[in-house]
Structure formats: structure tokens, C-alpha cells
Length: 473
Image 1 (cartoon, rainbow, N blue to C red):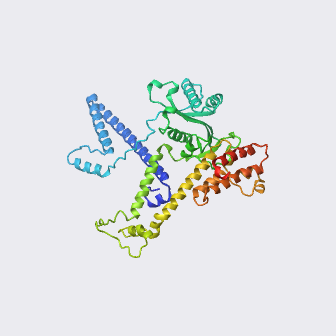
Image 2: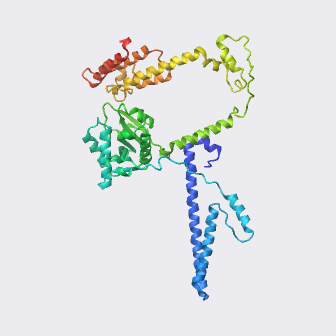
């Protein structure tokens, strides 16, 4: 594959192309080192032959050997200097030719972009019985127990010290914290199922004194980079209501794409937790995501500059007494007509319809629509955060309850409601949202027995919904 070919860039995504270029560069470096080693061995062999000949002639062995080594070092330094793009003086008029040849073959060295993870101290530990790892595990157990107060401490200790679990911890640079609990800045404890190519995250926490500093994202990216070496393809976790937002930012989603047969029976189902999943691409270094996004952005902007003409055409400034013609223009269209009269606006592809949609009454309508959307989303988020809302977060799996659609004619859930709100055209008012929320709890009451847990959750959630919609109760 040629990374400079236009067909390559259109057929492959940018990260893959960057990976191919890096692979080619690594192969070229290994080949160069191999050739350098072979040339060095050959020079040593030639030098040894010359020393043997001088000894046979009866000359002073030590002085001749020293001269031979000096000549060999001169040749070696000259060759190495050429490889580095530095011209070395040779005999007579060959100096200028050598400089020209070196200058023609020298290539600019591309500086490696500094990575924020290079200076980060972190370690992957497991219960292998070594004192150092046991100290780290004790610090992690203390961190999880402190930052996750609702988790039972015996449960935390059992998983952290379980030999099937591993933990990745970011360590402090402060020498005074070495060997103590304060050395652990943050950590993630997980259990890998290599035969099924997925891992379950049990605990994730950052010390309160280091929060809001980006350590949560760095932790997750380091874990993603590490689990790839273990053959892991998916990360799965059960997130509580306060952690869903964090996991969404780290690339997790509520939509489970991994086949259920791969994790069914291997992990527990936790009430009150939301199952989330993240796919781990084996060719992506997650610690260099900002660099990849920057490269993609630069590539897209370069393509835009190649096709666009707006940066190539300039217009003279408008005179101070410039007045656009307004004959036959209504009062409501004056602002749009004034903008269309500016040189370059129509040439850039703008129309009166585009300008009218962003001014006047249309702009006020968009503002009202956006305000209603934000309000409805806030109400749905409050509903999702309730501890008894867990049965309503995702659609009912009809493969587990085949007769559900025969009883419930209008199935609805919180994820479907949120999608309808984000589209922006479904709900015209708050009463429409209230109707769907009540339909959701009534469906649950209709299908389940009054003594069941689901019925109790529906009753509790109905009280909450009526509380946040006081005008419609």
C-alpha cells in the first residue's frame, strides 16, 4: 500500500493509514540496522585479515594494528555520519561530491509528538504473592473502599485480592508517598475472560484530591491499551446512576453489541446497575487519540481547502456610504436582503431562504424548540437516575418474554423516549412526554403480577413522575 496514493486514503480510514505508515517506518528502521550490522562485521573481518598480513611480514604488530583500527574507525565514523546526514571530509575534491550526495539523500527527521502518558507512572498488578504487588493491592483496596462507600468492604477486598482479577494503578511521583496508600492516584480492577475475548470492570475510582484533572480518562485509555495485549475485544461494566456519564465519555454505550452467549453465565446481573459496553479496536493506541484526531482534522481541512474557493477570492471593503437596494423588500426580509447584497455571499452558495431561516420569527421558533428539548431531556434524565427506574431503561427483550407484545400493544421505554426527544420533532409539549412516561409504567403494571419487583418499581416510578409533572397529575 502506498500511503501517498489518493486511492489509499479514500479506501482506508485515517487511523489505519497512520498505522500502515508506522509499520513501514519500523520495517525500514529494522532493515537499516541489519545492513549497518552486516557492514560493521565485514569491516571487522577485513581489519582482522590486514592485521594477520602485517604480522606475517615481520613488521611492528602493535603499531600496524593501531593504524588499522584507526582507519577502520574513520571509515565507520564516516559511514555513520553519512547515515545521519552529516558530510565528512575525504580525500581532495571528493569532499564536495560527498556533500552533494549526502544533501540529496538526506531526509528531514520528523519529530515525535510528545505524549501526555510518557511521563505517567502506572503499574499493572495482580495477587502473585510478591510484597510489592501486595502493597499496591492494599492501596487499591483502600482507595476503592474510600471512593465507593456504598460497596461492602469485604466484597471489595475479595475481588481486588482475587487471583483472577488484575488492577491497573496510576502512581504518584511524590517520593514521600512511595510504598503508602497515598501513592495510588487512581485504579481500575477488572477480570479478563480471554477465551471469550472480553473483560469485566469491577471497580474504577480516582482519589478525591486528584479528581477533575483528567486521570479518569487516562486510566481508561491505559486499560484499553493494556487489555489489547491480552486479546480482549470488549470491556463490560455495570455502571450506577452516577457513573453512566463518565463511561459514556470513555466510549461505552448501553447498546450491547457483543453476542450474549459470550458473557451469559460468566458475569452477574446487578439490580440498579446499567450494563455498558466498549469495543476495543486492536489497531488503535488509545493513549494517542488526540494526535489521531488532530491528524484527521488536518487531513479534512486540507481536502476542504483543496475543493473550496472561499479562501482564494477576496473582495474589496465596502465603502462607508454603501447602501443596498431595498426596493420591493418587505420589512421582515430587510436583514436577509441586506446580507445577500454583500459581495461574495451569493457566490458562496447562500440563498434568501437560508438567511430567512436564521433570522426573525424562524430564529425565535428554533430557540423555543431548543429550550423545550433541553427541558424534556432534563426530565428524562431525572427519571433515569431513580433507583427503581432500572427495568425501564431499555426495551423489553421479546426473546426472553415472547408473549409480551400480545399483552402490551404500545411498548415504550426510556431509551426510546430519549431518542424521540433528540430528534426534536416528536414531542411538541410536556404533556406528550408525560403521556409516554405514564404509558411506560402502565405497560409494566399490565404485564407483571402485583407482587412482583417490576410492579413495585412501576408504582414507585409513577409517584416520581407525577411529582415532576405537578400540573398534569
